Structure formats: C-alpha cells, structure tokens
Length: 164
Image 1 (cartoon, rainbow, N blue to C red):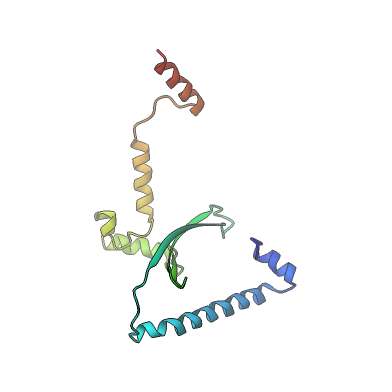
Image 2 (cartoon, one colour):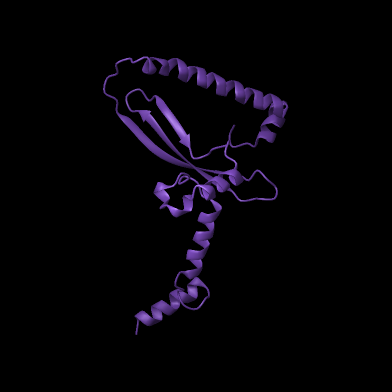
C-alpha cells in the first residue's frame, strides 16, 4: 500500500472503507487457514529435523487514533523464523486489544501488584498509571545538572572548566 493512509487507498481504488476492511479481514482469515494447515502436523506430533531459528525485534510507530490524544505509540514486536525454509513462526506484538486500562489498573491495585518488583508482577508487561507516577517522582528527585539553560551553554562551560 506504499505507506498510503486507508482513506487514500479507498480513494485510489474507488472502494468504500467497508470494502477495504472486508478485504483485510479476508486476507487475515486466509493467513490463519494457511498457518493452521501447516502447523497441524506439529500438533499431531510429526517428527522434525533439527531447526535453526532466528529471532529478531522490530519497533513500529503508529499514529494516534483519538483526536483528544495525539501521541504516537511505539509497538515492539519479536519475530521468529526457520533459517532453512524461511518459515515464519510468528511475529508477536506487545499489543493487547482486549485489555481495558481502567479495569486492569483496578485489578492491579486489588492484588497489590505494585508491592512486587516489576519482573514478579501479574501485569509486569504493562505500563500502568502507578508506574508512570513512580517514574515522574524519580525524575523529580533526580539530582540536577546545575543551572537550567541551553545544552550549548552547558557544553561551553564544561570546556572552560576543562581548559583551566
């Protein structure tokens, strides 16, 4: 789609957004059927030769989707593929569309998630409001680098001190 927004794709193809989303849905279901057909043998216990699997990480920056909150969002994904055949086992995004932020925060409070070190939390994979508040607090108490000003001024002052 050459980085064209969906509205522009619809305009260029002369189709409605519903048609475009139906085509995307169809492609998605075809991909699922393909994967199910290929991986069914694995579930049934087919013996495999030794696999050499490559793993890579990619970051995706996506545009805002609400007019009131225009921050871009970066999603991280980890993919794995067989080096011999090139078969991609999966591309796993750190995105969970079924989570409700408010309910998740309430549950985290109810189970005392914040009392545990981050790796041992139920919701360790999520950035919850109390994590954000802790981060702001740590930033506020971090030692200052001196007077506030332009970075260029700080650099010049450092060179003057070093050349004495």
